[in-house]
Amino acid sequence: MAETLQAVIARRSAFRAQYQNRTYARYEAIVARVRSAERALGSETVTDAVARSLFKLMAYKDEYEVARLHIESGVLGELRAEFEGDFKIRYHLVPPFLPAKKGVRGRPRKRAFGQWMQLPLKVLARLKVLSGTPFDVFGYTADRRSERELIA
Image 1 (cartoon, helix red, strand yellow):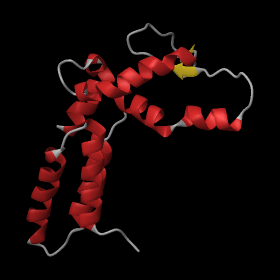
Image 2: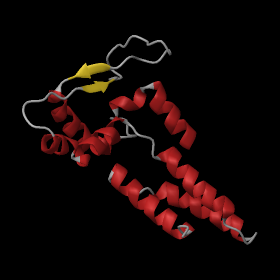
Image 3: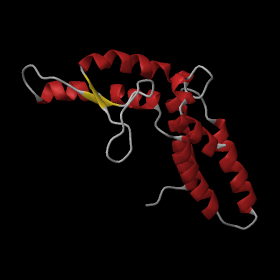
Image 4: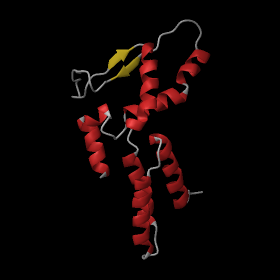
């Protein structure tokens, strides 16, 4: 059974609130404005498309969200339950504040970091309230500025 439009909007609004630890009234306001305009036509097709697409645009995975998802996933506990003995974990990341060489495809090459990255990831996950604010150190990169401009 297809999910109702109201359920789509409610679920995605709730996700946005968890994602940034605050209500995301802008998403709901835009969807409501489109819904109101389309109601005169007796349809919700455009509203449904806006609700789904705008959510995807607004839910980009910044560094804070990636850290939160990783920490809350419990992947480290799962690995400990699955494997015995002493094993090593490597995180392959491209920190935006460290210079990175370009790979064959012209994209920055990832660097390997050890399990000590757990602590910075936990801190980063808690700092998600900084996302999109002037205190967001990652928000000044070209990618993040572009993502915010697309939403506007």
